[in-house]
Length: 370
Image 1: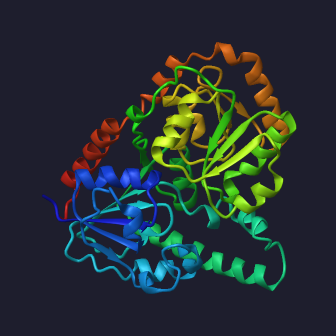
Image 2: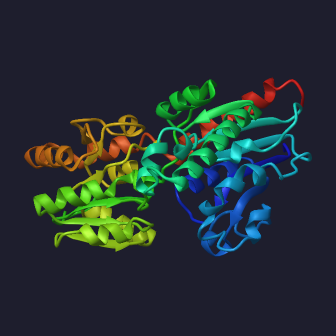
Image 3: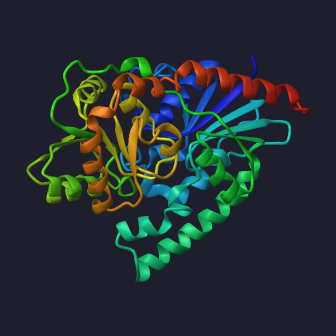
């Protein structure tokens, strides 16, 4: 067994990136290193009883709940992990995990969920959402993002091999780092979901309530159409959504996995408004037989088949979404739940683990300094 180190940004919630981590840990059990760790939130995870190596940031106030406040310290903190005892390093990265220090006789493979959105593609969206379009605060934040951008580019060369979670992200890795990436779609536990026997009269969206997800677009569209919408998820955007939500919009906040499965099984369609890297939730919705009405950019184009398993809208505006919903209402009976679920079955966990193990094992065999 290869002495492996697994690097993951933070373990403070169980979401899509942690689902990938679960398979990586199953295939290559080793020491897990992370900036922040909340054991309470990791109940039931395969590594629940293992010793998790955390960074010096773990002891700072509010680290577990508000870890993003310490963004300026992330590069320094990730570089403090001593990985000299490990020959194989696997990072699961959407921020700084790929930036760990390693030597020429260590093989570092990065499964990249995304280059850091807020320092590359979505910088201006994040600044606008935070009210930082001008002034000294804006100047300070822009300068900070500039230096993190330089570090991110420099640290990209610490990786031997990149794996991207979609062709969209492989293109972004090439754009940001000028590095090629092999594409392996993330695992989806398709078998958890079922097609409901009797659909109820509501649409559903599931998301973290953060600015780039653009849940406000969905809420405004359903306010206008006066159609029932269920919003599942929590986050800093909840306050705004409560302010703008009309009488047909129900904000449920966080729900258990079992409740989510039931809500998906009984809905009419799933609505998604983000430019997503891959979009596991879109696949989960299709595993429930739901047509997906989604913004037609990013990884969604690789998981949803227009006209067969869903419909796309071309701009992130309420008007464009309204037009897509109206088109769906005209075509609703043409969508076959069984065909939609069949599309989701392209992304099972077994496929991910087979492809990931093949790639890592072949890279290890070719690595000359082991």
